[in-house]
Image 1: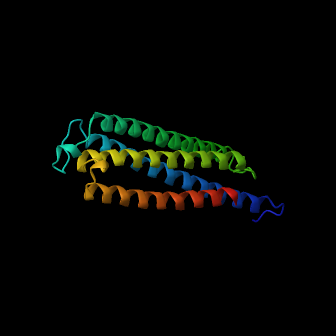
Image 2: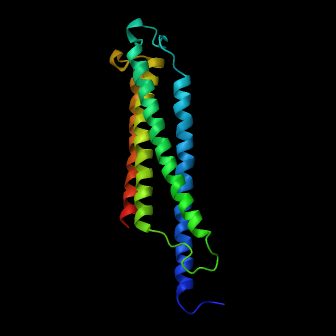
Image 3: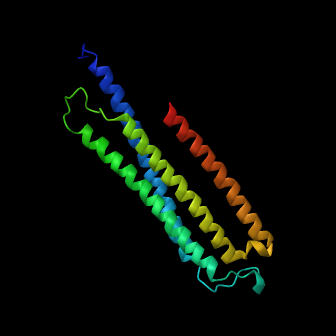
Length: 183
């Protein structure tokens, strides 16, 4: 039952490629959902005027830290939402194109350049969301454990650990995304 005109091989390769793209987009949307939950958890754990666990009034944050937290959380949420909507739009386009005609040899033919740029934009939105989420978490740490300027060991260790781990993960994510984009 193999087709002799060469379309069968193209169709199978194209379907597997779009299947991989849809799976990658699903993963991106799922991760963005988890980060969005983190945004709201960060907002719920902090209240203005809250005393830090450092137990020195000089280490307590002022209202400007709570304001920065709110701004960073909103910007982070916006980037995650942008990323998820772009990814969902790409998935919708792939699925609609794949469902037109089962017997069509070009069933999964999509503009790969547009798909790649869409995926790159979605990945960039996730990276920016992570950066702003990290900045907001610094504010959460300062509100809960004490200001960085106070020199609290707990605050410095928490912020340093987070920055090292998140930055390392983002570098791996960015490098694999760029590699996939270029190849």
